[in-house]
Length: 239
Image 1 (cartoon, rainbow, N blue to C red):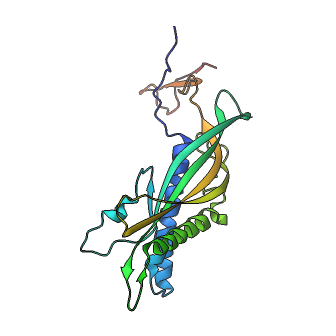
Image 2 (spheres, one colour):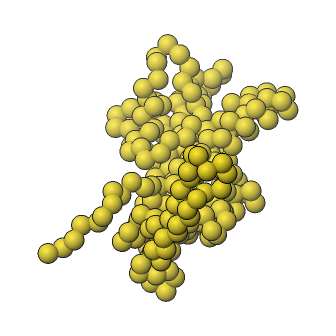
Image 3 (spheres, rainbow, N blue to C red):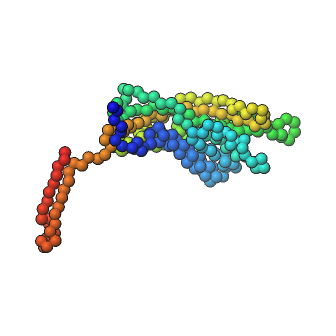
């Protein structure tokens, strides 16, 4: 008969921590970039803005659900999600620590809408969407491949057992695609996928997660002895 684990699995795996770290880096950095653009006196600091999400299936619908009486937020949308993971048996062990080679897809979406302009012709929505998309891809790539984020800011000391230790991050590819919006020809949404490969440690729970008692010291004090020193000292060694 199989034996169950003697403890509750109450932990977050490294692949979840790394995904959330990517989201945090992008979100914190884009807000800081907007602030820097404002301080620098840029005409439109919102051009440095990204809207960052995690594990969303169709985040681009935010473009279409904007209130009709308000100017929609045209900032690129960024969605980070875990795609695949591979484990090399030559790196790690079968008991506790395994190397996880993961790929995170970072999908970027740009929105545009056709508009009339002064004089003949019009402003095409597909071109606008493509430019917003490419701006978003530019920011994501520059943020994640900056020297500050060589290890995604996850390089704890080796003795901090249980924390993810990122060994490498690398952009494998960038691919553009178009989002199909049915019969809505006015709105245009262009998408791009950044495949980010990240290698890090993954940890497996052990057979006994408790801390065994190795030594027990007992001091016995007599209240009427007139001395602070214990009358009896006993040590039990369980090693």
